[in-house]
Length: 337
Image (cartoon, rainbow, N blue to C red; front, side):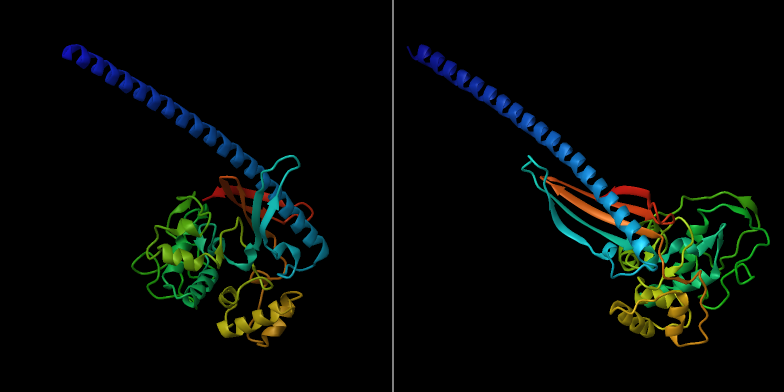
């Protein structure tokens, strides 16, 4: 009898173990199925969020086109400069709600790192301007020659033998340069005595691409980010949208305190009509301005937008060109983390 009871007990235990294993398998299948369904739903939400961001990008193009039609200057008191915060979007018949936030920034209100070199040759005047900006931000002066060489390495040079920079020396020995600055022991930015050559590195797309240079870490990147940009071509600074730091760097002889006084009056409504108006308000006849330094109309804008839909959050950044004011175009766009 004891043997039969033991056999029955083992049979019951085996049955329970089988039932438990089956239950665990079924539970795992349901969990995997639920996870797959959530992944599909999340991907659908991400796709819909991307389309909403595309709509926001089209809206930004229309706003910039309208601004060009209505205003002869680019200023911070117009519609394009007003951020869109937590706007709720809902389609008829759909109970889901998407939340959109976005803003347009004038990239010509920043220092364009692309200006630092032309045809593979660092430009001493622009390098000196970037050195002034670095000094204002508390960054080492050696950073400017390094970045100039990095930008130059991404450009084709027809011939470097005997060529020189705008100071006629081919090096940064002019005003505003820092002795010993640069990546070499002498700090010289002179071209090499070689025949013309193509780019040796890809062009940087933004300030984050400066990682890897000497003395460039996350803290340096964070300090530079609000004040610098990288645009497809050489640009001047817009006096109506630039920060005091960028204006003081772009205009030799303009101190940071003077630039702050100018931007305070500007932001109170006294915007500049043109470069001559800006020059007159400097009240310093020794400061001579050119259209390669200061403008009051911008052609390059960045658009940053985020859409949150259910569990999906998509952020996009784009660069818009307004060189054709009647039809602003998207130069590039990318998702960011």
